[in-house]
Length: 526
Image 1 (cartoon, rainbow, N blue to C red):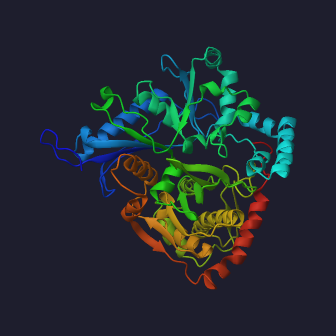
Image 2 (image 1 turned 60 degrees about the horizontal axis):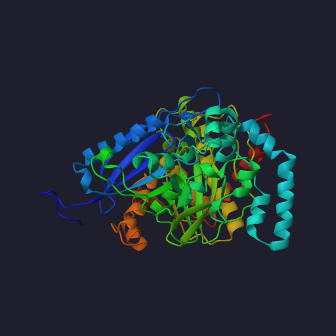
């Protein structure tokens, strides 16, 4: 397991850090993938103006260093016993900085930030985009290449880096001046951390993070010169894209006392997919946290979607690329937290019992769209709503309707995934905070008619980054070995899938789908 040094224990470990939307977590993993030390701290989100969401880059860096040191201290082991570090990060949150001094020109602009909303709207409605779509449709007809079909369907979103970066280039004079002087680096959180860990010697990202920016061509596996040209984004500021499993260099010894090899950086949902060992075509992962992310392994080819599934690079190891198709629902944990703040219940643990205490929702439907509706309806102007309220409606009915809506959205995403990809589903694994709710898990299994495994360990993004880093240094030897390490807390089997539950829910699902339609196009602008 490593060399004996100064009489210390021979055990070696993998460090993994997950930078999420609201927290930073570091775990120390042993050979059995058990957590031996851990530390968590909050990500401080800044709201300088309505609709703007930022993170201080220096504060994030200091928090990163602190959680790593604290997790190793918590483990009772030494820094030199850490064989490698893997990093998983929230996606599409970016900053820019001075190439010479490393000073950031502005705070991180979060993926939740809406400052470019009007720009997104004007671009999506522009004659330029209509022209681009038309040209790409013709090219697809002539060549039958899916990348042209994908380009003909492209619409901009505030969640993508593309137009938020374009907005910053127009509104931050210091940034545009640095670009003109070829003295600017752009980076998502992983790129910034690599730069800081290596004292400015590495400016890089990996394919999983690059593919979530909206300015990367997942078909050609490079930054999109077409999009960058269209939006006047300078290619010179973008980082080099490396394999997900790659030796990015080592942390400078002045940071942790020793140099630790940085062996992987990954986007969080792709990392969770790897942590769930969804290595084979048809493997599905459902992460139910603040929102729901459903990903399917599509193998060596990106999926071209017409219903709003997003083609992503899952990971690249050596010459092998694994692609995913992703659908998401923005308001899962959000809806449950909102219900708690309304005092429909005191503790989230109560919701399962409340839902089971009534035989149905008494005809009440809940539409979980505080942030609009995503695939397959794709309406940013949809509103959240309760429909079918009666004098007989109780708190228990409302809670049941909310939990049912989570399972209904899972069913919707699953159906579009099956219809579009034509890939037989081989296994489904669920993670995220909401998957601890047995009512949601069981109903999802019943509606899908498939068994769903819930892991014992919920920090799957951190585990995935650890697995990737560990494979890179020979800490673990194969993906088959990783599958052996995966533990399952419970397997949810569909109950009477062919007749009972699925048939019972058919009219309820139809009513809920009617409620979705009534909630659409509610707001005049987004």
